[in-house]
Image 1: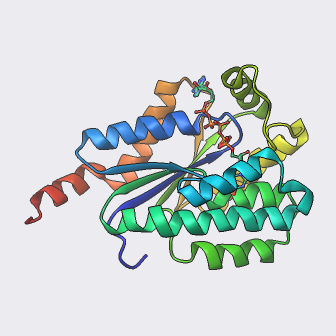
Image 2: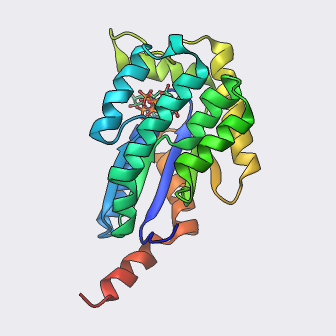
Image 3: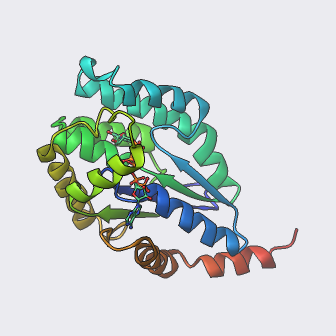
Length: 225
Ligand code: T5A
């Protein structure tokens, strides 16, 4: 992306895979190297997109159909990119985003059965040149992820997508693994059945090998102010 000085990392996968946990741990590690790190999420991440998140996760948009839902996720993404992600990358920050465009591909595209041409069109219009440098796909059997999400939720109600049946979540797992296989340059699947520390170690190995954060720090430290 023209004007990008920072790095853009996304975490993807099914419900309860550990994305938020690992986004936080990765952010702490990058910050400890002296890098500016922006932790964010989708849907949401900016005030406008957080309003759309509430509508999406409450199920209020679902009766309008898959295409309308994909467009509302896209509207949220446009605001998020414009107001938070692009400015952060332009000033040299490392942006870590909990879900991004691959969630639209998997949930609305593969499992929601929207026309692949429609999804590709959204990718071109909404994401354009703002593709992640690295996408980490946290992979685990959906039964484990849903059980983790249920423990964390406690007595709270399952949201629009958590409440779908097991076949839906198995389809999502296949869709994310297919994305990882199709785009090995950008995406890496991580075994998310391991404990938090082991998953964090695998993620750090990938980030370090592909994006060299230590070198980025050395370069920015050497820059004249
Ligand atoms: N969506 C989103 C679309 O349909 N299209 C789109 O384009 C986009 C962007 C977002 C929903 O919107 C859909 C997908 C989603 O359904 P959300 O609330 O943000 O909703 O849901 P998730 O992203 O699925 O977030 P979760 O919070 O459910 O899961 P995480 O972030 O993967 O998991 P995390 O880190 O919160 O961990 C869950 C629990 O497990 C524990 C944690 O402590 C926590 O209690 N845990 C572990 N336990 C054991 N071992 C480990 N390794 C663990 N890691 C975490």
